[in-house]
Image 1 (spheres, each protein chain N blue to C red):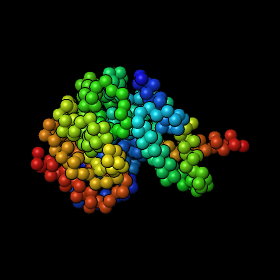
Image 2: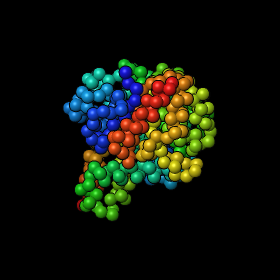
Image 3: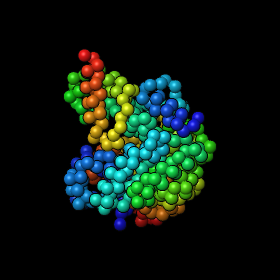
Image 4: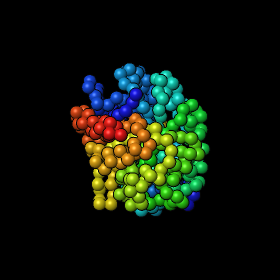
Length: 260
Length: 93
């Protein structure tokens, strides 16, 4: 049973005993091709894959060779869950950044078709994450409807990043975290939580560089109430603190699960 | 704007190939992307960073303006950068 996970970075080094996390999340882009090293990590931990380079929304052709590599990796190490971002990160070449898609019917159809292809190759249901975004993009529908429509059309699950919900609610002032959750439809298979950075009163950067916040915990509790509990990962990419501090954050999530 | 035009416009702006913002705050993406890539390549290719000194950041930005990176794997980005450096060096000769 996986409940609370840590997005693991090599810079975190060897993890000590007594972790408050019961699984690790890793990016396949950092480990495919380094199977010997991964085997040691897998031996000691349950693992979830969270990808960064699939570029599910790009108009570039799907990189099917890469998706096949993910399948082989998942089969070899007996991994069940692969999640990705509902975004695009390439156009005639990778930019290694998560760029937002317009909330349009064209994008719903385009992404849904590609998700079906990915799920066919992987022989697994995937889950797509609601990303944080900073610009007001062209829209024919709300963000929640966009995400829900893709999940419904493609049969994919949802991956809910509760920090991103809060960040977007401030940056775009189009919804509250609770109204977003109320509108969203689908099966949540996985959650993220992370910290952020206030650049201006109306602009938060999803930095993953600080502690998770009270607002994101409240959003997580509301999401648990509607969608149920699923594995929940804490992300920390910068200013990585001692593991004891991350363990304390994990306890906040455990408390939210127990209160559910 | 259709999906392809939108993606072309936004990535051109972020790469620094165009100064036409696709939407308000597109500059946030350019700043984050450029900062992340300079920092990543500085960590991964310190010998090139040292050799180029103050010119390193500008060189990385030129790399992303003109190079079409094909690898989904982060550990290969440094090698693509190295290929670009070799190409740039040959062209200079």
